[in-house]
Image (tube, rainbow, N blue to C red; front, side, top):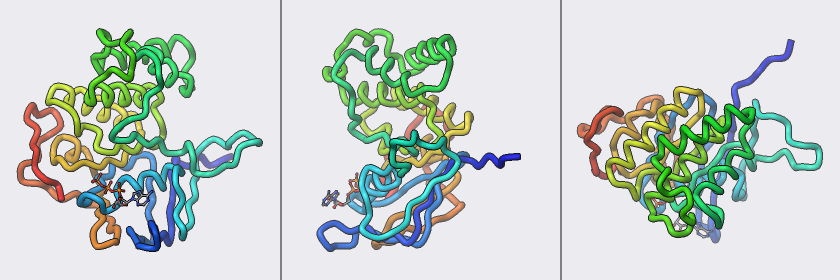
Length: 244
Ligand SMILES: Nc1ncnc2c1ncn2[C@@H]1O[C@H](COP(=O)(O)OP(=O)(O)OP(=O)(O)O)[C@@H](O)[C@H]1O
């Protein structure tokens, strides 16, 4: 009988530097399906850099990265970190083409059969309220609309691990609520989430673990600090209080 591991990525004894200056170092981090982690740190402490490292988009000069529980890469591909955890940039990269094209392109990465996939795309359009924007060129969208589209694409793909870099930073409150609902559903369906945010709101209330970057170190805790102004996920109020 084969043992099925939850998908996870591990990073050990990592030192990250730019131009010989240490940004951060840590002994061990594990990010697995089922985790919902709040990544906190002041501006410039390295939150985006850490996510890019875990996504395999950049490399650390020191450290060991590994993964388990993912399908084996095709024989002609290097079985590295790239493509294991999906990274959603705070200014998401979108393809040149319509909103609809962007959604359908994302669907290529899904394992669902055609009818289930069509249903999921329709649901994503509904949840992210993109119907009236479907024929619009993605490059013409506002910052908040781009983030909603990027979130809808990730929701369609339903990755095992997803890293969200300031996912609601450009959004008004109604958009924030839409995106929160999508993130919450991904969580319920078992996607592991690593979320950075400067806002203490429904987003941080979802998290069960806490990674904190300060003084070039990353500390890990199973306890997410409770911010006195934090609101529950279904709350209509969102707070704009510095989380740092
Ligand atoms: N390719 C690079 N070369 C040199 N320095 C870089 C590079 N990428 C990032 N940095 C620097 O590393 C530091 C951390 O950047 P990063 O974007 O990871 O921070 P952050 O915690 O996500 O910040 P913010 O909260 O403002 O988004 C910054 O000082 C940034 O200028």
